[in-house]
Length: 191
Length: 191
DNA sequence: GTCTATACGCGGATAGAC
DNA sequence: GTCTATCCGCGTATAGAC
Image 1 (tube, rainbow over the protein chains, first blue to last red):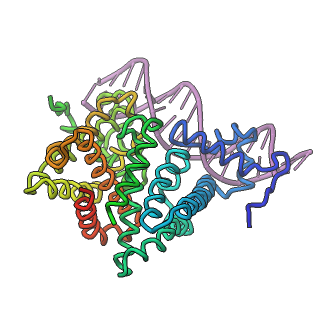
Image 2 (cartoon, rainbow over the protein chains, first blue to last red; image 1 turned 180 degrees about the vertical axis):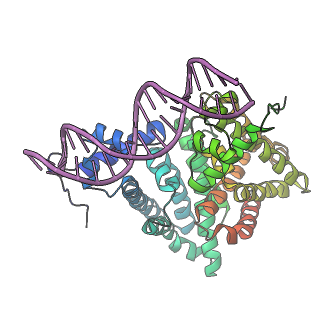
Image 3 (cartoon, helix red, strand yellow; image 1 turned 135 degrees about the horizontal axis):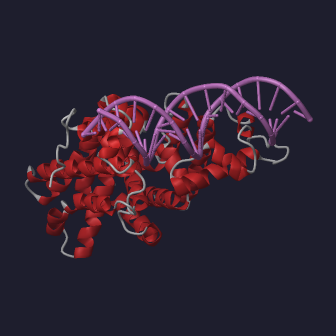
């Protein structure tokens, strides 16, 4: 199931390219296949043996990003006892993920043209929110209300994450802890 | 104070270029000075008599975006009676602005390299949130708590707006009304 | 699976004429 | 204030050799 190493010289060029791409996004906000190739130490032609085109590489990164989010948020939810604290823990973990993996977070949410050509990505993205189904169902009898709660908690978490990264709340590194706590507290009040 | 019309053939090339840029962002997510020039019906050299470079045009658009937001949100807040409803009205107006001016909204929030070279923009962005000072002060005695409330309301509004545009809540056009109501209701609960 | 070489196009930006 | 012409660099993508 895992992406087969498919490597010869590199052992795993896919990984090297995606890592380089993330660095570039972190530093410049964008990336080029050419520059990522240079950083990975291969020619500009090499990537095309692993990806159909530039967008395919981007999609691969985003896919892994959603998987990482799923892992992280699962653990955060498991670590909490009651439903309310589970949702609060999700919100805090969401903020922390954004801060810890800024470039990855931005790619998953802002990468652009996904729904059409990369429908699977939209699914993977929505799947992250399904983690909230359990807690939400315990707090809202009406299924419609439960979905509403899921969306609301997700929106709050995302809003705080976006504000944090944008610097609205001050220096991101300094404000991380307090923002996580704010996200937790806001989530509690929404229930 | 206003940008002088500065037009000859065009009457107002600045406006034409910025409008074209917005269309391009709406359609493709990015824009080029060259293509914007074509759409405005001028040569690729013309813009440089009005802007130092491409980023300057982008900054000009963002600046106007914040001004428009300020106008809109002011009116929304004025139209509500008590502080709670004023904050709720802001949140709803925020969502509506994002839906009504998608490209402009994305530019103001995602344009990238602003804080450094275009410090004024960060100021203009923060100024929008100062609209919430009045209502917040009426609801929270402690100044620190008031700021916290402002940030929280802003984050919630932004989260819903981002989710709406990203399609998380379904087709954006269909979901606009309900999302505005959700933003209003969530804001009320946060107070 | 990777390289070298190459075709192709495009965007940013400037110089100089009108 | 706008145009024409031009320089320069870069990125995407492919062909063909190893």
